[in-house]
Length: 100
Image 1 (tube, rainbow, N blue to C red):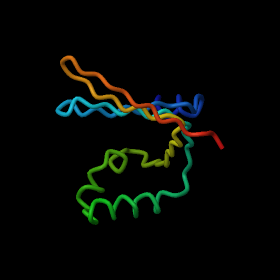
Image 2 (image 1 turned 45 degrees about the vertical axis):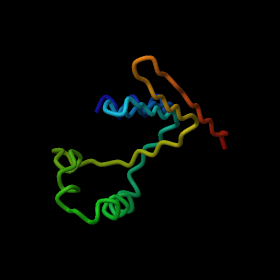
Image 3 (image 1 turned 90 degrees about the horizontal axis):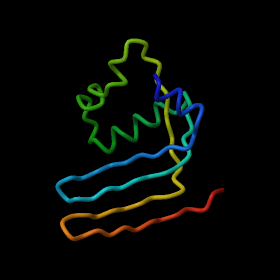
Image 4 (image 1 turned 180 degrees about the vertical axis):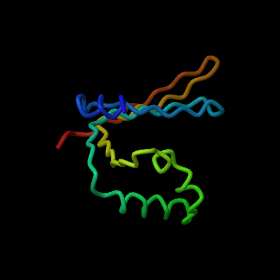
């Protein structure tokens, strides 16, 4: 996909997750690596977290892809921003992690 090709060319990525009800945003900046090994381990960890709900795992878009070429993307964060906002309210905390 275009996103995958962009990650292969530029490994610095940003993942943003927003909870509109709580007016919170978490932004993770990090370095992405793409690999084909480790799928079984990833599915095992996901299965444990989802109480081995096979219906959830089978519903993942990756498992419905025509080519079924699957890869594991790992993001090692170097910065996490936590923002809380609302009417008259804004706070931000920035956590940084030393590079290895």
